[in-house]
Length: 211
Length: 278
Image: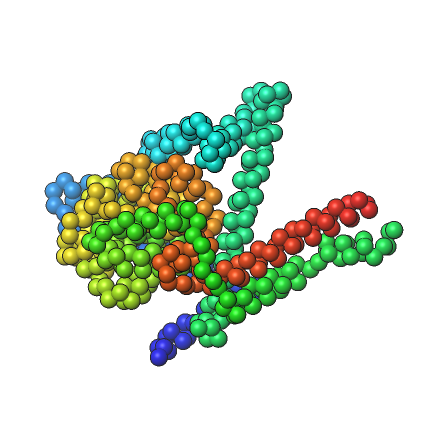
């Protein structure tokens, strides 16, 4: 037996689903209501999460529970966070550049090493493949290597795409198009999956005409 | 020729009201779903590898589950999350859940409670929800040193030291496998910061949109398996022998794909014929 809260929640979700889908016919007040409600609820939800999973445990609780140096060092990120709010006040908005600079500096420092160590080198290594036989795996390796090399040729713009570079670039375009096609196919599957999910909700949870 | 029936037909097709297309698509998706004609989908190698990664775990091992999606991707990722949790609990693997998308974490928690109840698992003993902490990179790197540095308590505020499920779990060294469910760029952070830096074994379930971006990681051996989109979810359901929404949605998926292929062919033919006449 469902609680009254569950029943009301399900009907509300059903109404909002239909309100959003009604945009496919044309823009209307029900769609606008659902859209604005979504934005508002999301923002409120985020605010609660940031307050109770970020500010409270990591700033307030830590400050209250720690002792000595650990207690006071927590005030530095706290102060940087407060300084970010200076953007609301035009006269002192320039102060917000400090925490932004801090964030950008850390992001860049971590990002450079991580991208080299975790992306560039492993991907280059994964492209250096054996071509020693005539198996399906060797054919796959050959296609992969040709794909990487010719795609790189296509993105080399320091010389006109003529001769060997032009030929390689044309082959590269084919690989790029195949990649776009695969992405489009997957995207289509994703969007249809969302529709399936909503229809399943309407049929199963709301109307209860599915097991 | 100007008013020939053939040209009239193609012009009519080219200017077809998009709402008619939406209606046909709705019928194509709704009817197979209502008929409930889903059949098991044979697994592809990336999904089989993801399954094998979980299958390699032993009772008492720890699988970290990362909820990196929200309601906008739930229809694709929830079925595979259910399957992965069923697989882990059926092997008595301890599950440690966390998330990097605050608004989606309750979805993961609901799934965790639902599937744990199916296997009579107890919160705090067999599984735990650590909750959310902001800053993907800071959280990932800190957990490599000490999980309690960043998650001093679970989502309810219970200190980790009081949770038996966390006994002996200090850092990535104590986590046998990470299974992430991704709808965005968090997968890149997991691979580039956690796999590359700490050598953490990991496998992923992604939305179909994200799957092409994740394949290079699989090909390079940086991740062990990949469950892509609703089809991947259906394959995983088949592997664990528990068919769910993934399998159920596949006939609708197939009909919708056929319809779109048909429209693409029609659209191109229409363009070809009307351009020639013009």
